[in-house]
Length: 87
Image 1 (cartoon, rainbow, N blue to C red):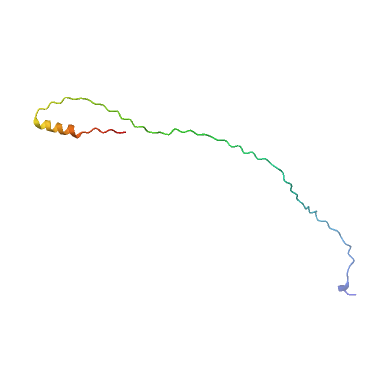
Image 2 (cartoon, one colour; image 1 turned 90 degrees about the vertical axis):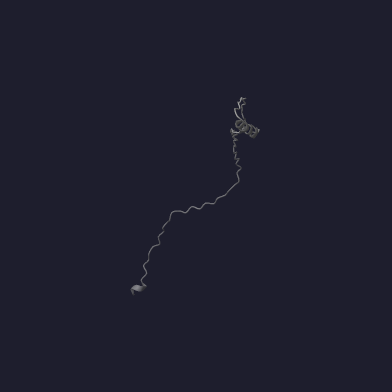
């Protein structure tokens, strides 16, 4: 007999791997009430609103006219001033 035809009688061995775990997932609806609390904050701010008021005063002054030239100058000044009212 030649060596190529030689087949030894080897006993069968069993080797065990660690087990594999398989999961089957089943889902069932569950009602969950979510309550969201809302807080309203009312903020108050002061805003400036400008209201203009005017204060004026009047006075009477006596003027002495010593010459005709001076009289013409003061007459022009008094007529050129016009009073305006601002609101």
